[in-house]
Image 1 (cartoon, one colour):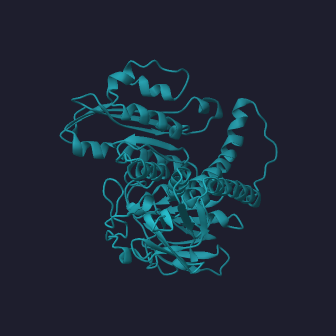
Image 2 (cartoon, one colour; image 1 turned 60 degrees about the horizontal axis):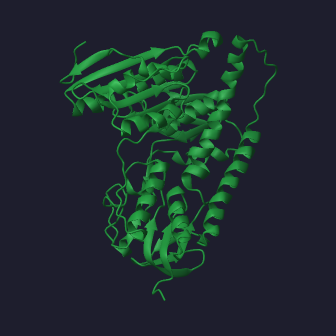
Image 3 (cartoon, one colour; image 1 turned 90 degrees about the vertical axis):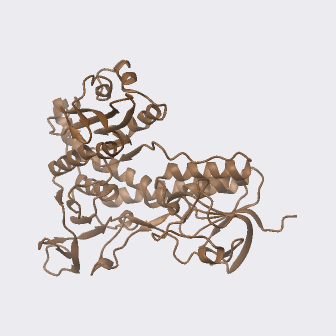
Length: 465
């Protein structure tokens, strides 16, 4: 008879937590899992999945316009925001049901409540006013959007949590931020016909991405009518009663913008406040993220943390991978360290981005000699559509070993390409491997294997040709 109620208790019902809870329970262990909002976590409920559905919706306007060049006459068309939101909600409810069903079929105990630690082996279930004990505890609570409390009027703004539940499509919106969430929603709203302005404090959007991706995407977004204001921050948000929009936004550059909605997309923070971590001896970084070792162990010997709460690579597949490694290590006697090297990612902007490996600036810091292959062109699709939209492909290669260090794509299908490119880079592909690979014609991706000569070289941080 176990001295604890559970062999494993999971706090957080997102992708990482549910994967761990379901698989450990299916192995015959006693598992409990608690989630205070909805099972599926940020990605499924109010993140990647509903966002991608809205991305699809926002593509149709341009698709209707492009059809004419291919001989199609598209008649009267009308977009209904309420229909999109209702259909999105239906799909999200279906997915949440699948998460619950998986846990239930594995015979895990499911709790719909906030859970907090009351020591290293005890968890309080707030709604039930119940305390349970567990031999092991996994924290997978993820993060939440920064709400900029220091900004006067921030309470009038929405975040990525609320944007999926707007009852009406805004006629105009101002989005604060320059990361992938801000960029994606700027493209979504613009594609659906909302007048969109993006305000960012930096001199280029998408900090951390390759410089050519950043600059080219900015240009393409501007062509779509998105106003991008850089090196500027909001200073005050207030209600407006003059009829030009529900809100008045004062900016640091002295301008005032009127809009129906203002959205904060300035980053996320871990959901570690008032979780009882100090009672269990779990140490935090100054940022609030949980400190973990290479096996996802916290400073408390029986408590682990995976996903965004642990400040490694904040992507859903990474959280799932970390959970799988936790299971191998703790329940299969097979110590396994999560592999965070060369993780591909996509930004569902318009046009979208797919990227893997080092950007040019990062590569310059690590390697003395680089060969850079760069192509920017109008994709074949727009030869007939007439749309002025560019595609970009960039390959960064170590000038000494010929190893491909990074590949960056901007354009239709870029996210899909990045998954396959990740396999090549994880396998240690060299540029010569790209060169001896036969092109698939006619495709945009053939450009990746037909750039034989560098566009320029870099030595000691300086371009030499």
